[in-house]
Amino acid sequence: MSTNTKTRDDITLRMERIIAASPERLFALWTEPEELIKWWGPEGYTTPKHAMDVRPGGRWRTTMHSPDGKDLTVSGIYRAIEPPRRLVFTWGWDDDAGMRGHETEITVTFAPAPGGTRMVLTQQGFADKDSRGRHEHGWGSSFVCLEQVATRGA
Image (cartoon, rainbow, N blue to C red; front, side, top):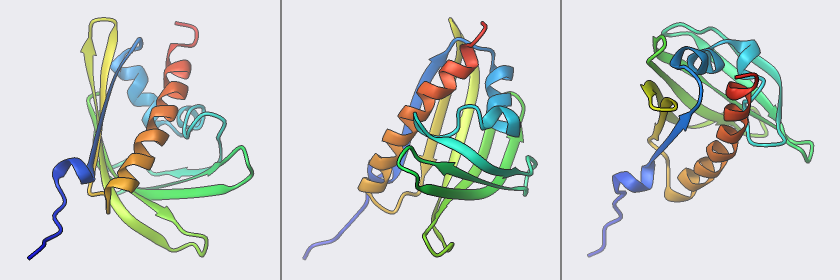
């Protein structure tokens, strides 16, 4: 008898970075629309459309424009907002017909650390390991952009 089970590692992504900026600065970069669009998305992407109602129960939606001209829309609902320590929200991609796909939950924490802030992103509830891997790549590239914006002028 065979069974298919998903381990926590298959459906959860955890990424940690030390960024040379304050928790307040990083929290603002995640929650203030005009700050978020400066870094949101992998390297080379822009965010021409965004709507953010940053409060528990508030909805958010962004459209990222890729270097090859494709628009990718993702949206969710804010579940917890605890400045400048913690942010929790859902995440689901829209397909080409505008239908929202599988939803995950993201928690981002910000804690003072030597050299700046320890930022930890945990995204859980992936449908499969491949999806988790694609998000790991996307977030890794996005965090390069975030760090550049966060430390600009520091």
